[in-house]
Image 1 (cartoon, rainbow, N blue to C red):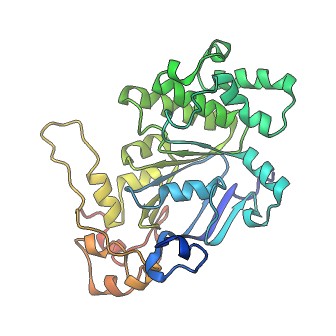
Image 2 (image 1 turned 30 degrees about the horizontal axis):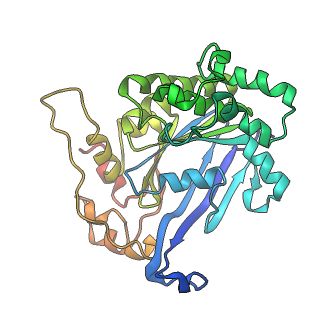
Amino acid sequence: MTGDRPIVELHEVRKCYRGHRGLGELLLRARAGDETWALDGVSFTLERGRVLGVAGESGSGKSTLANILVGLEKPTSGKVLFDGIDLASLQKSGRRAFHRHVQMVFQDPYASLNPRFTVRRTVEEPLIVQGCPSGLRMERTVAALDQAELRPGGAFLDKYPHELSGGQRQRVAIARAIVLGPSVLVADEPVSMLDVSVRAGILRLLRSLIDRLRMSLVFITHDLSLIGQTCDEVAILYRGRIVEYGSAARVMEAPLHPYTKQLIAAVPVPDPTHIPAELPSELFASQAGPLASAGCGFAPRCGHVLDRCRSAAPELRAVGPSQTAACHRAEELRGKE
């Protein structure tokens, strides 16, 4: 791999899920009313050794994006480049090499591990798939467990998932993800199902692995309180679109988009007298067809909406030295509560 280009690039990636009313329609083209656009023109780059946070509420397209990044799903349109190579152009051997370099840590450590597999079988499975010689598999498996802070790694080899705590299970999942020495990790809500006391250790582990193993990380979360301590950059997703992007520290300190402001305001504060803000609870409008046809997707929930917002979708544009935002009033609203 070359070091003069981003490790991952997305260009106008869209993903449409088409529903069907019955078995007889499975081979027919879905009607426009059966279309749900999970991603609508997502573009960004991931630099080597960096951590990109992707944040947004449920239904914003985060998990769809994760699945596309690791090749579990294909985009409806747009391009995904890994080290400059379009994933759509890869043949079988190329896709196998890609999967060696891009691995995923799933959200649920209780569902992502096969209960019939020992820890050894779980962690060495990627080595088996990639054709690693049997004489090397044990050494690499133990090394991965050690790196995931399950020490000594050899003491966990014969354990089954039901013998492990939630934090230990997630560390096994991390060991499985790093055993091949990937270039990119995609972590989809990796601490959301863990006890609060365990989360900090998993986050420190992920950051340490990125620094020590020189990997890149896409960290997907709905909890913005995790962004500042974990990520270098952040992309805020709303209804399948990036509405704000930039330095994680800058976005958390001075958000530009009204949606980002609301998400940050809703983060719990350790103060019993603090009353958190609540996001508006009205139902989303229909997601049939591209969102661009309906102006700004956030307009129904925005307190700063103008007539222009309902008729013209704002483009993601630079509004500062390290931030971009998709809001017609971003400059005007900068710094306002």
